[in-house]
Length: 379
Image (cartoon, rainbow, N blue to C red; front, top):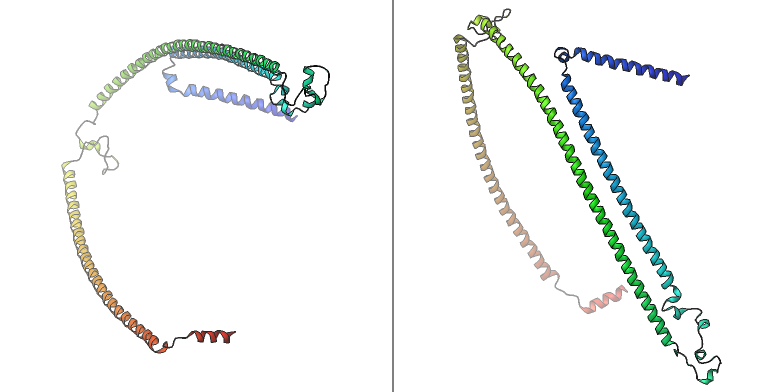
């Protein structure tokens, strides 16, 4: 029940809001004086709607062209990525096959040095001569003797020739793959250039269409503006003529000062009818200005006298300060001289005391025997 009531309340609120919006729109239409008096330019509105539709169509065509070009670019990029992945996979497969065939552990040059089955795999040298075992005392085979050297050299040369041919084939295949990649990149670049050229043409055509539409809209707006300005000029001319007739017949342009007086307050004037002051009013104002000027001059003279007194007082204070500083320097000099004489007297007394101690008290110097006796007693 709660959900059902809630959905019903929501629908009712939406309906009330829609009715309120419609009422606001209707009031805006009614209270818009311009649309109610002048009306709406239907032709201009239709032109604006047509211009907007043309712009939207041009934008849609531009977006469609851009989407097509993006799809083509994505396809080309996917092809290039697939080709690169295939080439990487083929190269990895060839490397793995080469490792499995030519780089086995048993084919290494050092494998014979640490082969755990070297003893079991090795054949005695005497088997190259005969299948009988003559014994170690026959001196027919020796340690380190290589009877299959020529066969091994032939096998090594054949292996080297095979490896060299395989490397040449791999280099040729890598060069072919590189040429294919260059060709694909060139094709991609050409396709991108062609697509860019096509997009530039489409953009130019869209720009031309937009400029044409804008020019037509501007012309229409200019015509509407010119018609509106012409109507406004005519209305302004009519208003100016009516104002001229009114001013020529009213008391506004007359020189009667009684027209500017306020009816309820005689000391006040009407600003829109006031023609200026009379000679008596101007003379009173000049007299008041002269009184104010004399007062200001007297105030300036008083300030000047006060400044002069302050300057003289400052000079006297500075002179007194200089005299006090001079007396302070003289007192400091006298104090320094007295302090110097007192220090000299103390130095003489200390020197006399030191001479007395050196010449009278400290005359007997201790000998080595005194130190020996002092050390013995202390033990």
